[in-house]
Image 1 (cartoon, rainbow, N blue to C red):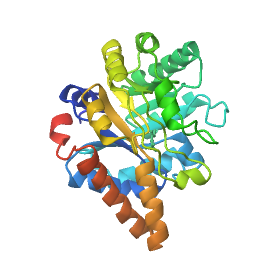
Image 2 (tube, protein in one colour):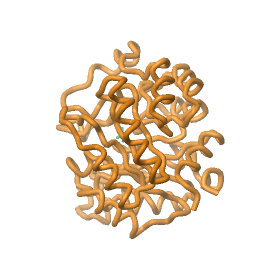
Image 3 (cartoon, helix red, strand yellow):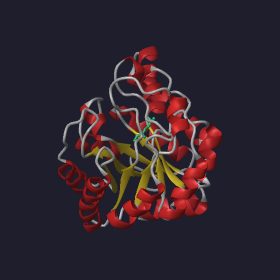
Image 4 (spheres, rainbow, N blue to C red):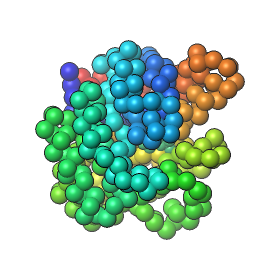
Length: 301
Ligand code: 13P
């Protein structure tokens, strides 16, 4: 079976993207895998710690079990998203224990998020996770820069954030980070923001984010590894397509499918109805937003 690390490298080299779909609700796993299979594309199914702590994906084991029920190894792989070292509520997390548990359960790639730490501390945490992941024969993702949105409370106005470049991944730091941490993929901040996860804003439409493609190209040149775009919901489409040509090989998509599922549940009153809404939105992301139908052959063969 071709490994996830190879698949993402293939995507980078071919200039296509592998989406990574978050599953804050367990019944989302089935329609997501069905949509990826029906379009013969390739995707990761992923869960972040906050999705079993604050949403309804229950646990690493529950997601793994649900994934195994519908797994189609030709088209999908299971990934562990955001395991923060310091979480969105500023609490310390036993991140290595979570990473080790996921690997033991069969997750095929993992992420550590030390982006709330100093550069040195972030490198040290990533190195620790790298030792664990690489010993198990899998790849790992780390994050540098501030992809805001998960914290409680309102974001600063988006246009101000974008214009100032505040929190963007710094070029010099990215070079040093990749060299010293040995990370396989790097999540970068180039104008992208996460969809809100708390309060009333979690049901609102995300502000349309833009991406600084020139900055991205510089990050690609100094790092030489696949770059990851978090906060993939609601970004201006032209910028998304341009980012894929400039080093982004994996895009995380959460809010887009979560809101489709939750609205579907409310409107239909049934999990089946919510799953149908999630299926249709996943098809839209693949066919109309990222244009990656049929890309399994390019990245995973
Ligand atoms: P969105 O919810 O904004 O799509 O972001 C998802 C994400 O980046 C998960 O890591």
